[in-house]
Image (cartoon, rainbow, N blue to C red; front, side, top):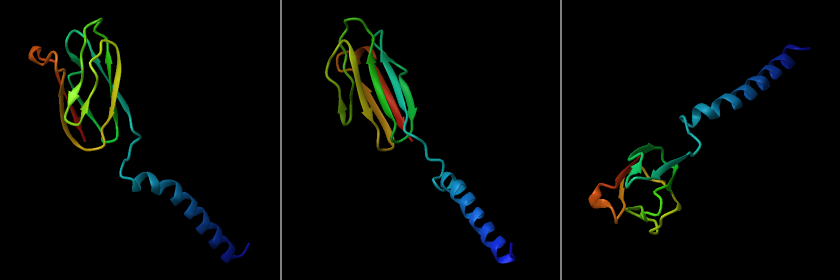
Length: 115
């Protein structure tokens, strides 16, 4: 094998290795979107405060017997229901306060912080 052939093979191997390594660091730690769950139970949101990444989804699940609730925030609003679920995908960073319009006076409030 000539010196030129060895150099060409080495260059190809280096290029393949770089193609495998570079994308993970070039994206700056990008992550796959995740799903988070908030449970409505005992006239409260569990957890009440949630920190997520942009692109993640939050699903609220009703688990409070026959007690009706809704999830109301700036830009999103579920129907009033006693069972089922409601999902929102958060595409912008910021703080999103929400509440149940029926039980807000009883402190049924929550907050999603999107990074």
